[in-house]
Image 1 (cartoon, one colour):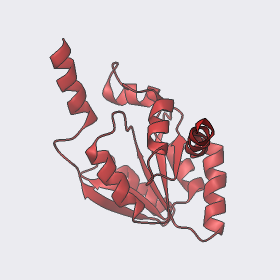
Image 2 (cartoon, one colour):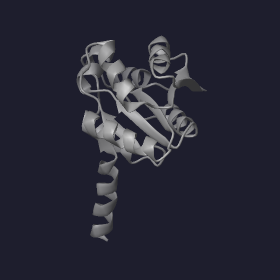
Image 3 (spheres, one colour):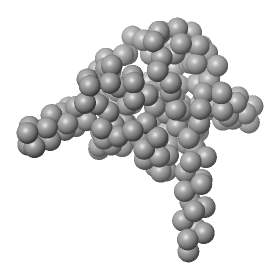
Length: 174
């Protein structure tokens, strides 16, 4: 029984890639004729909005890659008390989901050009976003760079957000 658990965990961690491995994997999959969907985010405390987004994004192609933001990037975007879960832990949680095929461990990028370069190398067919995504213009520009589609897969689930949950929990325990 322990061997089976170990094998399952190994399969999960095989889905977690650095940038170089992600580019190589994407290239191989494209050569096999697979369509690639790319989504990105923090995914700090996984909630139903994330699950619905990932599930719907997966329907837009064969393979779903997630660009998982670094702890440093999240701290810069969300504040000094974030993230709640470490980068590796967030990656393992996402990798455990059946809908997620690959998780890219993002370094701390400082410039849009760094993201653009990664997108050019991954060459996804589709970039997934939520309706009302604050980074929509950025994603739209990236999609145009590589002739990919930008698809808004779901409405933002307004009552579900890690930031909102964090605030509620912080107020409760202060």
